[in-house]
Length: 637
Image: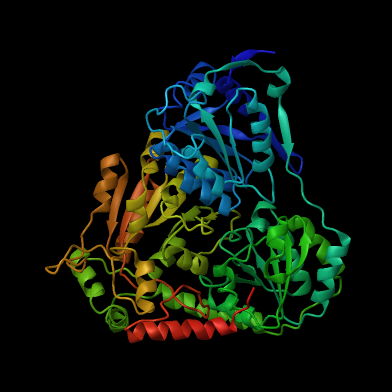
């Protein structure tokens, strides 16, 4: 029974954790990301300094950013490998809360070790301590309870053993993976205990597939046999189950079209004849047109978010819902008839149960796909030239001409996305999260190489993009990785760009500068609200944020860090920058000056947002009435 500190025991334990999936065994914990500070450096820091074993130490630049890196790393590894994150006791711990929520919403394993105050309370209040007068047991780390799948505080060194076994239970759970917070009081980190050697032996956590029950398979098979025009929606569970080929084979056997959620994209082939593309609010016309006419919806590995279902308004009132999901909570969504099972095994079992069944589709799938192909060509050719100037200017009579004058940029966002897809490698990994780019990418981005689409859209967390790109690069160092990032997200969090340079891991930042928060600007103005604090403008003579647009040179910013940078104001300049960036060995940034209001939009899906029911503005009243009319058509639960 070796005597060691709690922190030393933690490092040794982490170094001996493995996972096994479909017979393939791999080391689970790659290392620890940290910003050493008060509460962590003398405990966990000492342990890593003395004997890190096979764990790599990564230096973060912002605690939220480094935790996003770890989340993306786990996602790119299909949840089979993680990087733990550790922070100081106060602001450092609070900074990771957002990342914890992001990981949990997306069912991605994230292991967090925020330092905590003294368990003895002898020196209270210590530096950075958050005190609540009604309970001295509350600290900053209690904030994690709302956003983690498992939370614990190790106030005695021997508690580490049960805490870490429970942490591994959750981190390897196919149904309820997410963030795990193990708070480490700084005095306990240094306390010693005679740990049993058994605790440090190699432990293999088997990630097993949940086998479907025959009765549940027959329940949904009976409904599908009566369906004339069903639609399958492939979610993130298809990706993590590695069930893409099984889904495609199932749909081919029964002539069932399938659509993708943001999390499910790249688990199935974009070019497949039955893939109608992204569905819902950020979906395209082909998927949404098919969805509106479908009599049965089969959701595989999806939690049916409001964007996927268009706030439950996309489908026929009499449409029946079926689900295959490892999580019983998600399986019950929309009152569905469920199968609680692994996506791959569930689809394969259903395929056998439906032997001989074929849908009644007779050209509708091909027609819907052809219509979207025609729209894709229009989006790719959408230019700021004489033919399109009136149309573009009509969307924003003031900002677009001013933007051209201030920045010189004349690139439309859709043409930029189309060009980037054409110019970069098919196996390059695209990373994005927030703003208008998720809509453009779900609609326009093609993915015929597996797991090349890393979209965080469960939480739509601004600031994930660049950190996420580094996480994908650490997981797939042989691939080119591109972060699709708006100027708003870049300003919010790009500090791990410096970490990419430090680690020698090249990422490519595609910064879409449209002078503000363009997506939210669209949302407010389309609902009758004035242009209010969503464009990057100086104050005018009246003190309002309606003055001149700010001209920001993001290329100069990144160049100062050591990146190779470019500014693209035209499509020719963008193409040249993309080509040259491929030749570089360090991280690059392309500052793309894209015209506001030139992203994709619409395609027959409605999004339910809270709108004022009383207003002096006719435009707001009209928006409210439109909301009420759409709400009448939507399912109630």
